[in-house]
Length: 409
Image 1 (cartoon, rainbow, N blue to C red):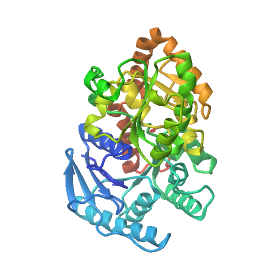
Image 2: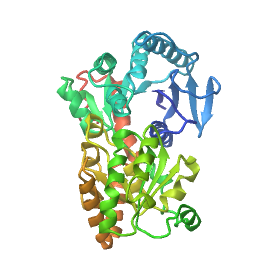
Image 3: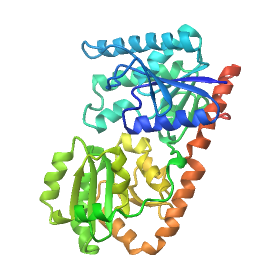
Image 4: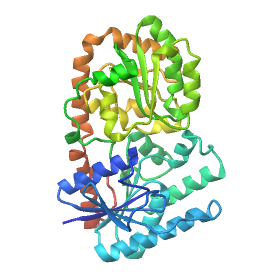
């Protein structure tokens, strides 16, 4: 039985898009007969034992907390995680190391891979230097930006195989000069076993929020600038002129929360814009039940053009109507007018028009919902997607001489 040790930034019991993707991968691999464990670096910011169980999965932790100036701190993190990986490998003896971005995890796994002669698969979920720009913690072209990219390039060059979550990331690596035959795609996916029929509308919650009349446009997630929620709020007056009574429900929080609330309060459509704040993960389904159209108005940037998000896929798996901006990451997931609707990015008036047209064509919604679900089932179901990994694992363990993974991936 193949044993896979996944090297991670953080994991369950923390909740994030990162941990949910990890959970889906590991649970699907378990169901396919593989033995899996995870190990996290020092950025796993949760108290707990050195080894713990979460949702039937085993996760090992790296002790300590790195300190020092930028550059020094990161090398200390890498060193600590590499030593922790080697300790787990000595005890558990995995067949494959499967590291997931950021490059700190990849570099630590690369050190352990070389020391122990264990094949390394490195998976890139986003370029973290671009993610830092997107969430406001970094700037493009800065020293830290360039250092992060250089470290990632080093990991990609040293890994035995590389996966990205979408074609945009893969194409960017090929443009950098990396061999495309070494780079496979494992797209964002969902565990369809978790998504049955959508829950019935929670009328009591709707009444408490003042959402008594449809249609309701909604967003559930983190409030980062790149999500474009300011454009969605700016679109509301024009949308209400076209579709009187339309409401906007914003569920979540984040760095832009205060600014968005100020913007909404000053809007002519202020009475139709509702904020809930962050809600417990166990309550999210109740809020989904109130939303007629899930809107994802991401702004155009390197991050959003290259990376496919998870939230639209989860909505499509639940047979919900999705409207998303026409950035590259969304275009990989949604066929305009077929499985959802694409709206102009960075264009409030265009967003209002697209949403109004969608509401006018409500008769097409049942077919669109089924097409969206069918698309997810055919292309983004983890029960099938994990075999992309498995074929590459077998290839590496067989030590094929040419190293070309295109056919396997």
